[in-house]
View 1 (cartoon, rainbow, N blue to C red):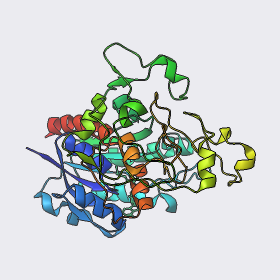
View 2: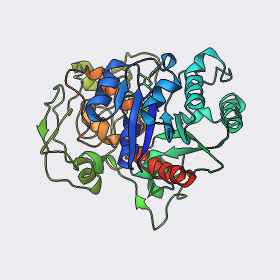
View 3: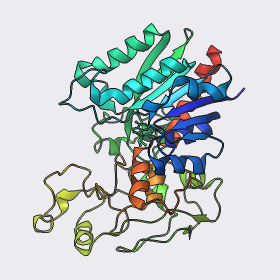
Length: 379
Ligand SMILES: C[S@@+](CC[C@H](N)C(=O)[O-])C[C@H]1O[C@@H](n2cnc3c(N)ncnc32)[C@H](O)[C@@H]1O
């Protein structure tokens, strides 16, 4: 029997895409942003996409298409409320979207739930968030567990860390997926989240690099937008590329980038692979005072990428050319398959934000396999 689920705060559907690849079925998705809801519907035509504020929906409405039992509710409530300076509990106004996720799970009473959050949530407020989640759901009969997963250890060419909370009812618990890939020790020095060599062992595959992910895409000249759709540059050069191209035709969509000014393009030229704004001569950088390590970050071809945040605002630089990353390149870094497309009608800034917000589908796939087992066992 298929395991259907409800996706809350669904975005354009990164998590749903991965769960679906694992054999789960996105029955209902709720998303307030019209561009994201439209993109979700375009790529998952069988799903009922409700373009609305989660606060305005109820468990009974969401569960109505399930005929009784809802196997799974998933979601990634936005996390702006969580910062080092903000120590309110779950009841705090800023965090009320997490509270909404909790409300709907308690109304729907699914067999299992999965919630995505930023990893800083774990220690936020001295652990108050984790404690409230655990006690609220435990009282409702769920066995709650959480873990922080790094996407690069699951075949995604990106060192993105995210916290996941799960709860399974009826006395079962979920085993989080085990890594399938390792970061070689020569690369761990570029990552604060790995101790040197700890992840290396013979039965895991080496992590996927930017080159593995992008080298079959045609280049886009600096200061030009690119064309969509466009033919691939060559046959797949890596297993990752072959995987991304499965189910897609001969051409690739959304390989277009924001065009930067001449002045900004000159700055790009100073940044080496793996470097950032620090390599840009001071006289060229009369930019805002906010300078974080991802600003003007150029992807290094032989490493996984840093976390793909909003790559236009952060001015992520393409690995092989002095220009911004294209939407397709960022989508590849997130492991979105090439058949997943964004309408050309959607503003490129909205496409960029959707890609950055997503759970990498390949990570979702591994979580999906674990959930499938846990939900199947408890039925
Ligand atoms: C972190 S993203 C979710 C990404 C998604 N899980 C994925 O993998 O693609 C959070 C999403 O919640 C949406 N959102 C924010 N507030 C909302 C609300 N009140 N009701 C419904 N959706 C909301 C945002 O538009 C955004 O798309």
